Image 1 (tube, rainbow, N blue to C red):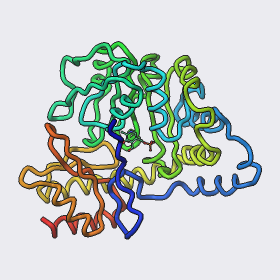
Image 2 (cartoon, helix red, strand yellow):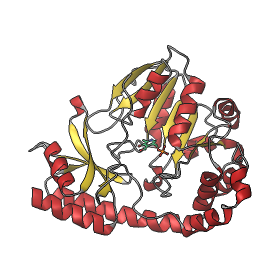
Image 3 (spheres, helix red, strand yellow):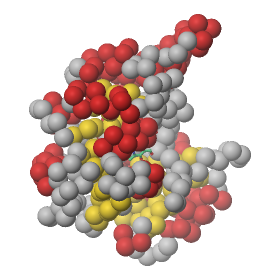
Image 4 (cartoon, rainbow, N blue to C red):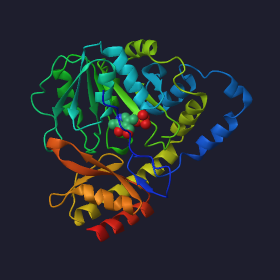
Length: 338
Ligand SMILES: Cc1ncc(COP(=O)(O)O)c(C=O)c1O
C-alpha cells in the first residue's frame, strides 16, 4: 500500500511554516496553568481516564450536547480510524468526494476496503445525483481541504438522503467557518458522526486531541473499538482547559479571520485565483504559470507552504493563515518572486 505522507516538519533552519494548518498563536494561558498543576508524580504514575469524562463534561457545556454524545480521540485522525474500524468490513466500501483529505484512502487500504472517490464539480460542489448509494462509510471534510470551501446544510441533507451507510462529517476546520452541522445531530440525525480537532482552532497540534460527536447509541459502540487509553492524561487536561476558555478562542479566531481576508485580497491582486475560504488556510492557483516553481522559490526563502497536484483537478498552493507578520513576509516574497 501507499503510505499517507504528512506535511513536512523541518527539523533544521528557521522556517515560516504555512504548510500544515497549525494555529500561529499559542494555546490559551489556561492550558499551561492546567498542565503545570497536573505535573505531579501521581498524575503521571496512574492511567488516564479511559473515557475522558472531565473533558466530555466541559465540552458538553460549551457545545450544548450531553457527554454521552462525545467520544475522545488521540487527534481527530484517531477518531477517523475508530470510525473506519467500527463501520467498514474487510472488502467493504468507503466513499469520499475528491480532492479532499488523503488519509481517507489510507484508512480504506489499512482496513482492506475499497476506496471510491467522487469528483467535486469545478466550483467545489457535489455532483447531482450523488452516484454511490451503498457505501459502508462516506467521508466528507467540511470545510474541505485543500479548497477551504464548505457545503451548506441543505447540500449535506441531500447527500445524506442519497446514501445508505453512515456519513462522517470531518469538521477539523469548522471553527473558522460561519456554520457547522451540529444542528443536524441535535435535531436527531442518527446516521451522522461529526469529528472535530484541537490541532487547528485550539493550537494543540503537538498535544494530539480530537473528538467525535454522534448519537449516544452509536458512540457507545465506538467505545468497543478505540484503544482503552487512547488519550493521555495531559492531552485530556489541556483539551478541557482549552475548550473552557472560549474568550481566548474567540480572540484568536477573529485575528485569523482578519488575516485570512487580507491574504485573500492581496493574493488575488497578485494574480492568483483564490478559493474563498472557510478554514484557516487558502487554496490558490495560477492559470498563467506552474505554481510548483513558486512553492520552491518560497522554500528557498525559508517559507514553507503546501504544494498539491490533483491531476484532473489541477495543482495549487495551500497556504496556512499565519500571524500578521508571517503573512506580511509571505506576501512581500511572493511579490518579489512574481
Ligand atoms: C480534513 C482533516 N481532517 C483531519 C485532520 C487531522 O487532524 P488531527 O490533528 O486532529 O488528527 C486534518 C489535519 O490536517 C485534516 O486536514
